[in-house]
Image: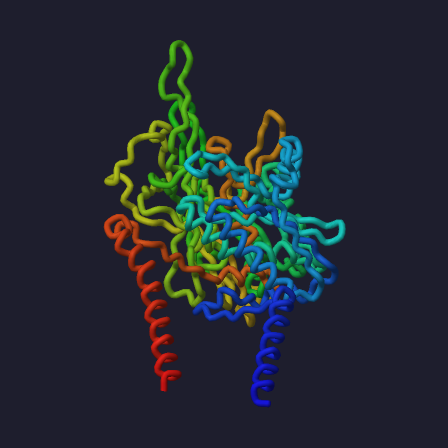
Length: 552
């Protein structure tokens, strides 16, 4: 009887095991034991997912079993994250993994797919790697497309600082997956649209040079051109953008901006500290540029310096004549230190894992002590810099010269700051106004950048077409100017901002290549022999135990 019960119990346990195996594909769960909660969705992401009002289709174009190691890891992390999003979402999310070479077998089909994905912001990546000793070229589309009914948006998954190594770029991309995907989902959902005002009468920047930023912001926000002179206040706006002012703000208009910020409004200032004029065959003349907002920014704890920062280590390039080739001029691309590539603050939400930001004629920012507001540096140069204080002359002959450390010793310079806290008015003891608000009851924030060109896209004047924001036509590379500006606006004015997901960090723990090269065989033997030895000893212990037990 006891034997039958034991046998029944065994069958019962086997049945439970088979049932669990059958249900395992349908039930998914994992425990996040990481120190920084990198496998746990942020609260803002959960709020957005719970507000999804209709089914979503997500097509992942990182399919196939022959992806290189880094992209295979990116694919796995993407699919794991999408499974987490599905488990939280209020609506059904269908995920399709697309193997491009399998589902688009011809060159014509892949070319059509390339055009479609490129229009959604997912350019292909051409990889060159070795497969069985042969060099192989492979076209990879590191992105996904999210569809909600007739609405559709693309998400580029491979986003990191291109100045970092390949492994670090993949790691940074994985850290930003939740932010990129949830932000894209949010753009497809009905939501209250925040209002941003632009002061077009103070800037002579052509509309076509602002079009990429404007179109990108219009997907999420309502934009309004504001005539400051005709507007008694800026009430009703959530944020303002001061984009490359070319004439000086009047005191009355500066007062309106000050009151808007003190009352809790947000602001993004993209302003040049110097004015650039071209001197034929000599170079560029640098002179101080006044905006009329210097006093209020100084009161808020910042000063845009009337200088030009040149970076010898990280800079763009320009075409210059370096001599003659026969009877024709020899034009080559040469490094131009006056176009610095700015690195983002790696520990802050707006700029974490951001690619370099392309600057042109950038001025530095200083902080003013004694102002009780929080200041966070957002953009910085490399440590090999030189400062030219206006007025000065910048000669074209400085391009392409060998780097001289002794001449570029100004150290790392900050070119953008975030200022947060309860602001007080810069006009408290200057202007008599019964409606003046002297101090804020709620927190506000501003972002100040010492370069108006950060928000200005180039123009192909042959085709009269706008180039992408941050695109360098000489190096053929698109930098992170647009991402930086969109992140800044999202941080300033969005409720439940997906930016909170950017706080996650994934620590790379690479092997010590020097130790592997010196003692690789030893570690291989240890990794193989120790588990085998442990298994052997464990088996012997079981055999000896059973012998002693049953020989009694």
